[in-house]
Length: 106
Image 1 (cartoon, rainbow, N blue to C red):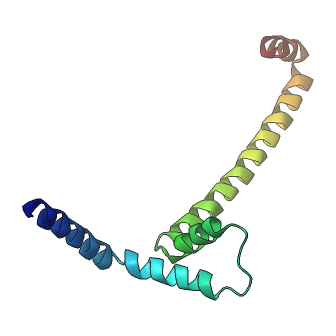
Image 2: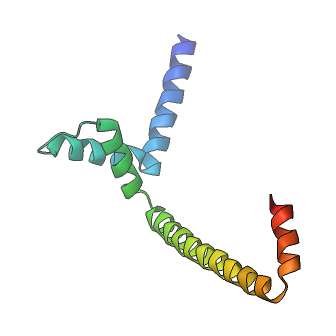
Image 3: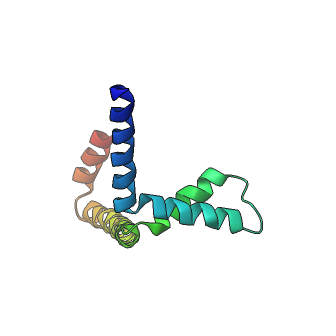
């Protein structure tokens, strides 16, 4: 009997923890949104994942990081292009050194 009460107490503590953290409320909202969806999605799990992520406070952070990654990719491509152009200019001024570099690259 004591074992049953201990397990029940642990369960109740966990339920209160989920409630305080807003987990139960968020899960309920997402499940209601899925229920009220006129056309049910093919993959309910993907629906839950999308809506759970949208409900979290870090969504703005994730979007900011995505934008930063896109900007850095553009800068990277620009630097690669500039490097290519500078190597071509260098080859015009010192063709022998450029041939040595090409051999070491392969």
